[in-house]
Length: 193
Image 1: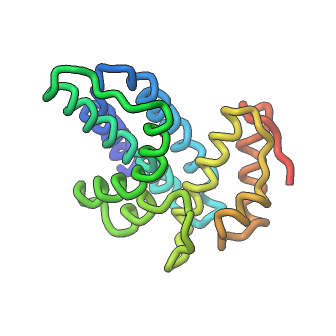
Image 2: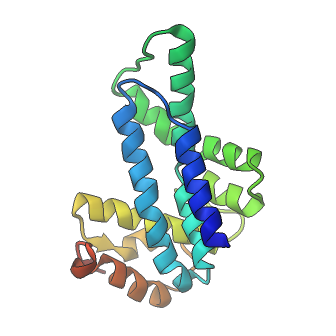
């Protein structure tokens, strides 16, 4: 049932958000593709964090929804103004970086996804010290880092991720799962400590 909910949620998010019809369309596609790639990674590594795999899949699928909210608003503005809404190249990445977590958390709250899901979406970059440990948030954090590393062809550096993300999960439990997902035969770039 949870898997079915994830598929429906994925279709709903894709259908209802991000009709920018502008220069931002490629950015929207990139964000959406990243979210879609991150979800199965989170599902695959979820047992190492003691997280239900379908829950990890759903949370990872939603983790960057705040970026889609921003693009959706740009699309609405474009329709209202009847012209493209343009930002300087330096502004858009900063807007996305600084606002997407809080806007994503607000969207998750509005959709009634529950306190835990809201917290994961709103803090998935783990920039601030979390008030409470959250293994689902840590799972999404590692899944996102792993997707980005694999897309850039970078080596996986789990030690650095644990340090930067202040992760509480067991490194010994997580490492074999990440190694399996990042192995070259599964499309990864390799694993190093």
